[in-house]
Length: 277
Ligand code: GLN
Image (cartoon, rainbow, N blue to C red; front, side, top):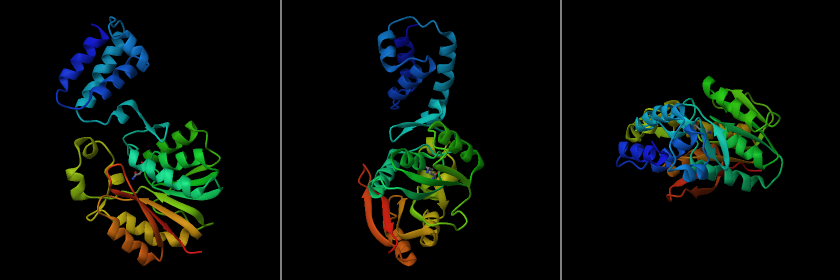
């Protein structure tokens, strides 16, 4: 069998799904081929039987709806490859907007940052890679913490990104100049509507906040003023249609809403608030 035959065979098996790129990536990874190598070798006979078995096993998982990131145990975010496992959410491109905004507001200055619900650490680590910050990365799930620590080591940030077991806030200490979070913001009903790859494979506790979906956002906002330094900022990823409720939470907490960034689909996605000086 040629590589091109294997590719065509796999494509036929998932007829109708938009998976050709995923299949290509799976082939490349299963046979340890670079993209250009794959295209050069396309019409050569496959001699790597182990690679074929590996590929078939993984293709089965892909066809069952498992996210490619879990199969490869890696996901690119903000230009870097993060380790992931089913214990953490797959980092999303929308979340890169939050990182971009955070970096813009930090303006290259040193700061203390708190990331609530750090998961893989994609936010905390991306910020630390581009700004001279010290980040406390809070995560309540033990298996997620292990992935977080692996990523901190991968990016050699042990000095500046500190994983900490915990839910909403660390015990009160020195205040933070910035708090960031991509908390669970779906309702239980939203999760039922979500694609199979999300519903059956990603950790529900990272996705669902409660009956309304805004519960975690509300708790984070209510607690933020106590943890923020004067003039400190709060950046939160929010769900579609949650802007109004979130604005109300901010007002109730005495935080000033500064802006709301829309994502690539035009949805209000990242809200920025500030504590008065
Ligand atoms: N902070 C992580 C991310 O943005 C995890 C978020 C979560 O688990 N809700 O991917």
